[in-house]
Image (cartoon, rainbow, N blue to C red; front, side, top):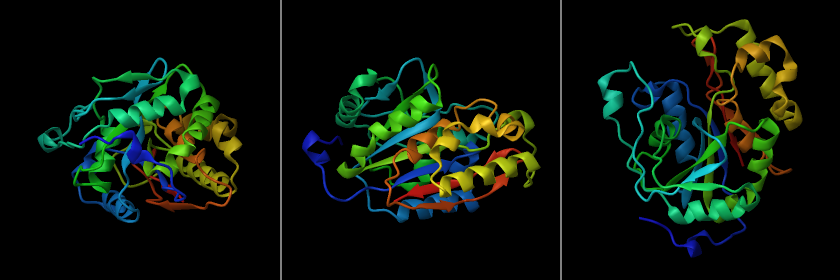
Length: 266
């Protein structure tokens, strides 16, 4: 199933947006506090016309958008139980939404990619939020050649999609350091400190401080050793209107160095 451009007619209703701390791919198949929180997040919003996902797990040179009508489920990980590799999320794509995203971001020369499927940053979360897989999904890549300010501004350019019934989901982690990860439900002080600081700045609407997270010194260097998991947060914060509040859920730092903090805009 695909949508015609007319299905994306503008309305006065603003579709909410989410940033999801996705953590381990096992959250797609395990029943735990995080997967249950994602289920509730999906139930809390009207069924969208389509979903645009910005995942930490698709980095490119230049910006790309998926345009396949039937995107495959990508198992982009290793060392996990067979049940995870057997998981499928057969949501349709939407070439029409891909074209619309290209139009909205016209100045950024977005390239359409008809071969790319849905990586686990997208499907592990969406399989919980919309388990029927009946909402078309398109992914927008992260241009690895650009800095945080570029990604925040790109997010601002996507605002108009919220009035067209499109749910924008950023999928990453505020704190993500696999090199320091430990197998236990505990957290390093620096991870808790950085996560809490980001929460304070977000609540204060100090987006500039979040964009320039590296100014927070040692805790930032440890929390964000590479920024691909942090950048999807900036897309979602950029969508916030002046009168909109942020609601947090799954507020936990675990595995030593993994923040599962998630949030809803609108």
